[in-house]
Image (cartoon, rainbow, N blue to C red; front, top):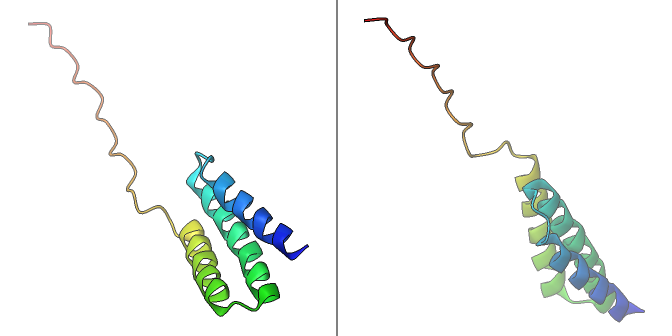
Length: 84
């Protein structure tokens, strides 16, 4: 039963890389980290717990942060032709 939780966490984190949307990818990584955290608690492994607390926090934090990529600058309309 406990190993099934570890396999589920592995599947969630692996599946997260197939999402093109960065927000969805980060949410899936956070979900996988929470499942890994659960697994770490069940097997009483502090390194697994700490690592996945960090991953979950970073994934969630980067999901709610505004995008760091500035929006593209508006393109000026072409100048009207003069009938010279």
